[in-house]
Image: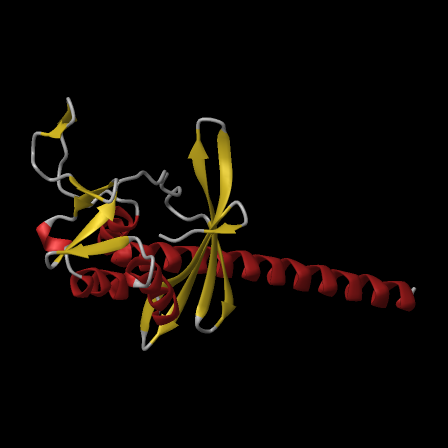
Length: 196
């Protein structure tokens, strides 16, 4: 009988420990999700500006018809069409300043190389930056974040989704703490890293 009671007490203790550990992990996950939402709230305005730049939305208006841009913003060079960026973001320094407020140093370096490196997205013409005309489809990820976990003391992995007409697609964000500031280090949509 004593042996049975000892086993029962041990089982109850183990069950209680499992419940506390499970509840603790769930509370930790909720805390990390709350922190992730707070981090993104602080980055959101600059993130939206960066995304507008990176998806060709930060350009001057074009009203093209009958072979002419009525606004005078469309430039044709060597058969390619170029559109100038708005004045506030028409230099590399202005764009890099926005990127640095949102992304980690490593991500900024990669984006800057794609934008301004040889064969990059932007072309400098008469001291101003131009896009080569084109479109990038961007669909925002779903907020608020409901699932997040700490990868390390300086990294958080957020799992969310993007909703398209065809359904939801998985989306992950890695936040990294650099110099006491949280920044976005990586964005992955459906397993593919994206550049915004």
